[in-house]
Image (cartoon, rainbow, N blue to C red; front, side, top):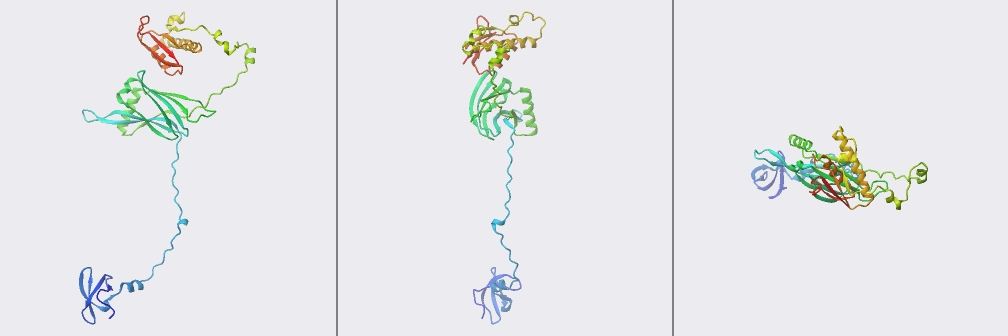
Length: 336
């Protein structure tokens, strides 16, 4: 007999696979298919391998060698060079009415250039320095700087950067100063737009290109002298300077004889020009400090002066405190 108990078989009519349980007689067997036993004639079953052998052969697929498979090119995202930016990410909170409000901003700096940078950052609120930061910034790097409470927008915030290249280059500037002062109205408007449009952040451009070093053309002193210019030896320059002044009075009547009828803008321009002249003289004389009298009034001249002083490298500090002679109408400046 061709089949024995335990042989694996396949039912020809249904192609179901099973197992021989036993012979019932010479023509019929008992088989088990998925736990169900039933009798079949011997010519109704076959061995599975015979069935596989007699199947029509399908065309053999030729395996393609790996090296011949075209490799999909990776899409490389092009880096956009568009400058150095400040990025403001609002952090939301809930008010008493369960409405979304901005509690503070997380502030990042984004370097979208090929330059490796270093920078000093001073943060001011209402002319008072809040903090100083010094960091390195790699090409195409984004780094977190600090958190700014939303209400500080009313405190005249000012971010003052001094950028430099990590590796100096002959043709590019040694350092580069940038100042950003958020204007509260514009900032509040931008914040409202963020909430309305459900955007995550907004960016502010600090600069697009790091500057080249200014040309330093050598002057022909002989030509200058023959042209009528006075040329002095460097070691004797002080003897040709105006006398040093440690007290500078910027009241308009001290600067010009005829000022009646002048508008406020013209008066302010004369006062600031006079300050710059006396300031430069103080630097050339290497004075340790000077006092500038600006008066009290509406504080416009004082604010303009303080704004200028915060950008001058020679200034170590300045203070507007009560003085028995000038009240709060004078600022004392200390030099490095």
